[in-house]
Amino acid sequence: MHNSTFKSRWILFLLLVPVAALSGCQNAPSFNVVGSFFPDWIFCCLIGILLTIGVYRLFVGLKMEGEVQPAVLIYPCIALSSAVTLWLLMLG
Image 1 (spheres, one colour):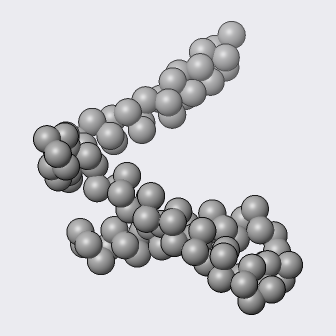
Image 2 (image 1 turned 180 degrees about the vertical axis):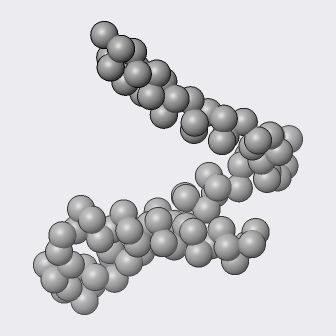
């Protein structure tokens, strides 16, 4: 019984660590758009997705979409890397 109590406390500790780490994130960078404040990361993600759609269209135009394998992994990575790069260029 002692072992199961130790495991449950350890699991509870592992679940609470991210909450404690995120408690310091009080002032998120944001800007005013028509009276509403939007976090910058939303715009970076949207632009990253739009850039990925552009890359996909480029691959289709060059008839290379069959060469990009596995597509389910490649396109999200392109979106993430372009969003993070945009974030660093704009706000870093």
